[in-house]
Length: 211
Image (cartoon, rainbow, N blue to C red; front, side):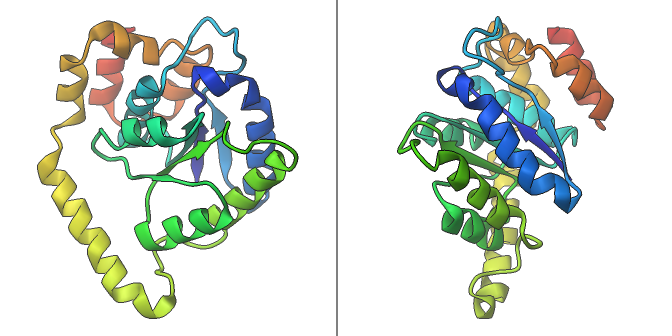
């Protein structure tokens, strides 16, 4: 699995801590982490949580990555921004139980963590516990297991509703403020990571147009 890490500007200083915790947990599982920044609070590319939503949607819909780990101070803004786009199901995750139940019941492809809320001693351990429970089993199996059938049915219903209620991503990108979209792709390593992994030529061409 290809996993993207994305930080917005208010929590960019924690990028190294989050990346270390994520890699410690998922690399032994055979997954690969792609760090899209922000890398420090002083980065020239200053991502807002709205731009996190744009970037996450482009990465997931193009299959440049399979999963997105993101967040902001409370996690709420990043979650709302991500869920504003087609092809993204983002959960708000504060602890390991949230991570496990979101993965097993909702079978999403992104999580938003509150990186400022209660992030003191043990903050790095909490991140490790979150990532362990998020990826410890194949997602979408249901929890508790006796609820698996109705939960899987509800997930399929949600997927069908989202197909109707969301417009195509490229159409959305072309109608959003162009500077907002362009700023989402200005990260230091964006072009290097994205174009090496993007599997959708139409999305790649659209991103090149903004660049």
